[in-house]
Length: 512
Image (cartoon, rainbow, N blue to C red; front, top):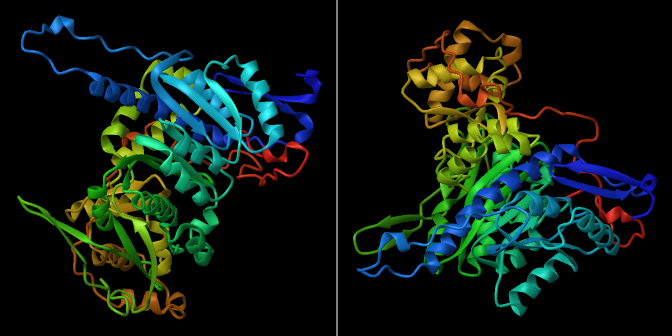
């Protein structure tokens, strides 16, 4: 490189990269959490991938074969090429920071392809690859992202084990080639930063981009995750494939999903039971889901049925308002519990403590996900419930204690503070609010212009609600860990979109 004064040096993890100081490169330190989490997920996935390959290559044991003749598992190393390891494509690599960190911090790598369409970006990427001495593991390529994936699909005998898509905004134009160029049991990593679209600000744009109607609701961040998972499922089923979420997370200004892609035309048929339409009340924000199909199995075969609908009346039973219809969304679990356990165990060791700057937040967020109710899609927020009836704010622990004492399961969601996930019926949730209002009355002036509040509070509670003021069970994810990121600095959003036609390196708008 030229004189160091013309370059900005960035250190993250084990990587050290330099970019031209005059290029207006946008480096967002908040995205370090995204990269740290991706490295942790790939490290665990690499071990699983290697074990699966070992099992598939293992010969059947002969009756006279001794246990001592078993081949010892190979310990995966970091920084050296593993022949049976992962082939990774980072389709939009920019400066190559993410790809370089994968090479320096993830064990069991065969080859990483760091691709970008910008000549300037690839030039700087090559310099950074050389600077970090990872030429044996990282190869730069200069292609359109879709082209390099189609090239692997049609021109190579093997496919990628991992594809990482981290674009500016919407990734849907890249999902089709990504699904096609992945090997069976391959891992797809997708980031979406167009949260305004996914969270319901422009439902017509969400339909155009993701094939789903987004709705503005208290649970909009989880709904955003579920819209993206539905979109990936929709792409997979075209090719006789299906996806299973390993981890889906909403953080800061983006969402990040890690899904395994498998091939099974039979399993594709069951996807209709995991996709649902959403009905949301205009007045009180209550949401009701209707799956597109159902499955009934007996000893001989499986039966696929269509469900009758809608699942709600024309007007909401709680407040009398009409419903909005949204979706479809993914309504199955957002993550694989076994994988999440392995990931949490991986982050407990001392090596991870030294490796990741965002270790406390990772442990807090993932620990919280372990506590979430997997079988309850979407959540309430205490603020939304109390604001609907214009009453005094209620402590979250009061809601938890009331639901537990009534015999229902309850948890928070990693997507939002003061969130409540529960298997309690909606009328029980409103009974909690009605009981709270009895001791914290709402003034007539506040009710004057709110038909929804008047209708809800006009009904008497039918459930015995007990607020345990001593209820203060502290979840493990709260014990000295970070669960929700506060705005750490100015200009922490997704940055400015790059333009590959410019001569400067504006295409490298964010260090990947």
